[in-house]
Amino acid sequence: MVVPVADWDPGAEAVLCGGWSWGLPSRGDHDDAEAPLVPLFLHSVFGYRGVVLFPWQARLYDRDVASAAPEKAENPAGHGSKEVKGKTHTYYQVLIDARDCPHISQRSQTEAVTFLANHDDSRALYAIPGLDYVSHEDILPYTSTDQVPIQHELFERFLLYDQTKAPPFVARETLRAWQEKNHPWLELSDVHRETTENIRVTVIPFYMGMREAQNSHVYWWRYCIRLENLDSDVVQLRERHWRIFSLSGTLETVRGRGVVGREPVLSKEQPAFQYSSHVSLQASSGHMWGTFRFERPDGSHFDVRIPPFSLESNKDEKTPPSGLHWLAEQLPPGGIPLEKNSDKQLPAGQAKQKGMKTEAMKRNLHPYPRVRHL
Image (cartoon, rainbow, N blue to C red; front, side, top):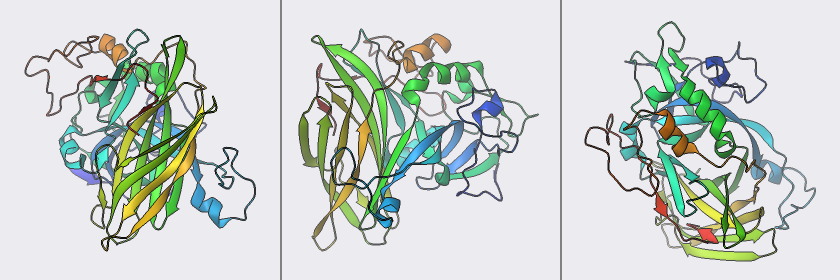
């Protein structure tokens, strides 16, 4: 049974479900006594069911707000952009209900969070399916009488049903330890947004780590991009044009058809498309910016700006990302297949749990790539 939650204010910058109220370490200075606790939600754009694990306090750099203000300083990256001041904005780390994943695959290609493998396996990229980041305004909270309202292999590993609590879920030690262990690689810190001709582009970069290749350092980032059509006119994404500036002084241009092999249509019925991709540099920092070319029904084209964003690597490199390998040590056998360099399948019944196959999706990468999936 699902019961909507009344009096929810999607514009409020309150903590939806303070992870520290479940005993998780605090990531912000909030009064959790006043924080509403509503971990179950519906995604207002993509429509999937999910559960909040913990919040992130990000800095939102909205260039639409900056363009409405008087011009001040130029962006230090030198792209002719006005200085943009960030404001605090709440995002949430969530699990997606596996039953809804097939229905959102045409509109969202980000329903997984990727990690680099350990340092001794530099060519492998792993993913945890059904893990996402959701903005506060995209949350539509609800309550459920089910003890396991979300079907995801990690739901019962991370959360424990307790009918004496409101909401009736408490964090297990596994969730607390996983968050603390992987905080540098999960953390969402900066969000960039810009609108051109009613197409809003939102970019969220994530630092993934550094690997050594032929006596040089290769730094990796993942970035999530969301395209939203704020108008009723149908448009289709046709091309992408990226500029990548590295601290080493190199400037690279990348052009191509569509994104991640798709040329999505943005309509009134399905106004948004979201995807994630990866980039690597042989320098510890850099910048990216560019344009998307869209096509109207009459065949005319227009360019939509991608807001410039920084690629920073100011994380602690002493502890490498361990999202999946560490989970393998904590979860019972059969939870996630994580054998290094292994393509073995789990036995039937373990490979699929509650309708979702959670696996370590290893992608063989070029040993020393400059740019990946741009």
